[in-house]
Image (cartoon, rainbow, N blue to C red; front, side, top):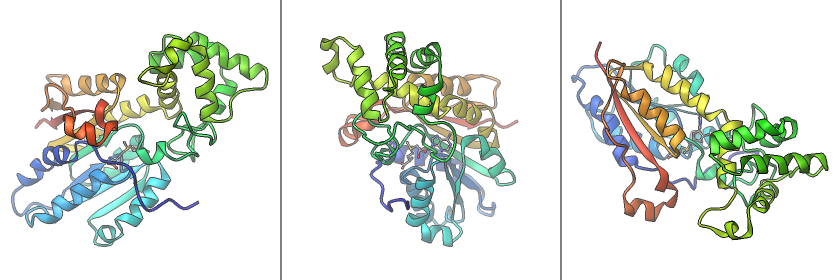
Length: 313
Ligand SMILES: C[S@@+](CC[C@H](N)C(=O)[O-])C[C@H]1O[C@@H](n2cnc3c(N)ncnc32)[C@H](O)[C@@H]1O
């Protein structure tokens, strides 16, 4: 199936991230060779587009290049269509890859900026075949890279009750983790393990007392977050980004990371905090979208941006 050429994803804090990341490029001496800006999460291409546009608009910056990666082949194909011209002009490369492989990809390239906009895109949540939304009648998959790893249903079909409960608690801080895990295993025993995301959302909803079923957020929100993080190994991927990938950034270069829940933000904060470490935090407190951005794009409400600069040795 070919990817739709358009995106419904709205980039978050894009002008701010572009400003932070392009500053070191502006400080290069006029004769300096082309440097790279790496977007580790191409998604719908929102940030990549603004990077390309801003670089092209300034003759002093126009020689620099962008490398964008995504683990989702559909995002990569859509990006290759959207940015066909920039790719043919040699200003952009798009690679189907994961965070863990970025260190190899950037070896030998002078990288002066790197960003990651963690999690999933609106295109992915609205794709019924991914099973990321509570309403989805498609398969209970949840993988962002549908070509590798095990689906959510495969995980629920083979795992012990304690393991399912641990995932729901550790990655979703779900207080009813044990009860939900027990219901899932019960359904499995009866041969009724839900095949769709909607089916799983309904099963989880029934674990909650009726009064708790109609709050501001869907009762399955924390469980879905937890299962998605587990299935996609999101925290391990973030560790590899923070422990090795960002070391590919040259001294004076910057890293910007947008995270969407406290487990991620805690890791980013810690990686940028160490006094003698290779990075110096430029944002003491995370930057959050303002009210106007949240109104225009409600998905941005939980976003936190941290930026750090690679120290000179
Ligand atoms: C929030 S979206 C990015 C949206 C993009 N910044 C935009 O404005 O259009 C996150 C993207 O990162 C990708 N992604 C998440 N984790 C990844 C990983 N470990 N390696 C590569 N890509 C990843 C997802 O597949 C998704 O397309």
